[in-house]
View 1 (cartoon, helix red, strand yellow):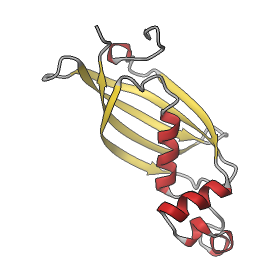
View 2: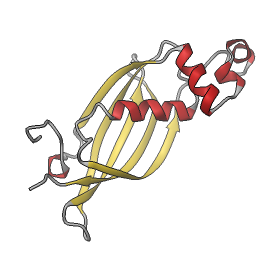
View 3: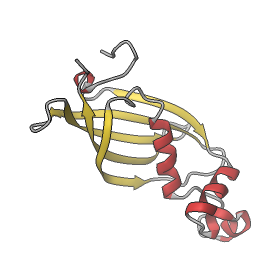
View 4: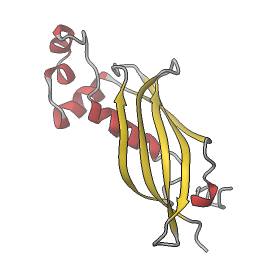
Length: 152
């Protein structure tokens, strides 16, 4: 159960339950702008070069996809309780993200346990993905997060 602010806490984790956020529309301008600053390969920054590449057109970089995932995560009711990511596992980029893609985050709770050393928090495993509008995933990963218990 969420608290009056709508936040979820460690006690609210139900393994197998999912939270969703999105969609986020990816534009050519966003792909080019992000890549120009953070991943300036020509197939991310120049539509003509991208068309000549083996990918056959402009597509978002992997780090851009991670940034979109992170932005969508901020729409979930865990901002007060999620302390830190302890590490990503099984990161997979499954399909190219092209201009016009509508991406949605699906965050599924896994195993949760209380911390042995800090009684106000616990550790939760998450399976997450970004789905395209057709429901097919473009990106998946597993995360281990440090999450607070409900304040007393």
